Length: 155
Image (cartoon, rainbow, N blue to C red):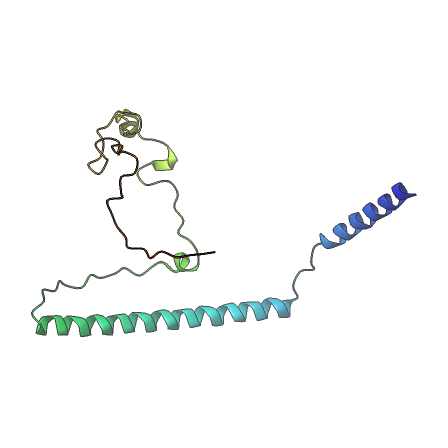
């Protein structure tokens, strides 16, 4: 009896998952037009926001430069920033291969370069590496840094 119930439950689950995986109908032309209009409105708003941000950044930069000159600070000429390509604004940058490796393959110069690694002992240690292990101190030696933490009774 119990085995029969398990089979019925499994069949019901199988039918439910099949219905859940059914494809949605394609959007109607009215829905497609509404989505296109919504995307166009969002793109226009993004362009307005971008222009507003650039204008406010330019105003702040100009104000800072005028104050810096008045206070005797050294300033450098502003750097022109190239505008991003419209396709690059919408998504992540498309990089065809790692930098310095055309088509993602190691060049002859890269293959001929010696491999230097601190881990493998083929490179000298960095200057920030400790010269040796920390020396042991006798038991009961007080710590060198006294933080002054108050005694707390947490019972």
